[in-house]
Image 1 (cartoon, rainbow, N blue to C red):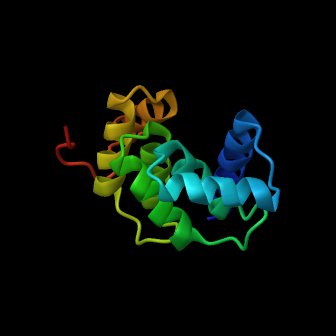
Image 2: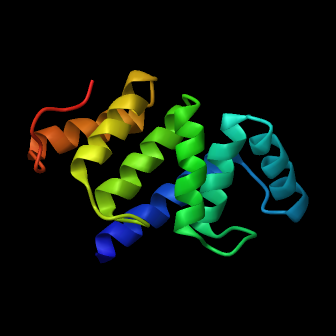
Length: 133
């Protein structure tokens, strides 16, 4: 469990640095408005803010909701984040088949980390039957 937590913190840190986002209240409000207006990239970034607890109370369920909205809007990074949450049981019951579904969607949209994790899951045969296409 400690390894999963550390991996999640590392992933969140890398993504936050990569996005070079501020945790200011104004920036968070901008993301909320953009997400509410249908900007899936803003929803994904806001999901990460809630997952990491940067400028807001940490909330896995809110992150899950925002990642789902963004993934449904074809935001590849959000799909990969959903895969991570389902694979590791963060805010949801651990479910490798759902994780594969989201990692596959992320990979098909060009998300390299999603492709890498999907490959690792297949290589380890983590309770996999036939993957989603």
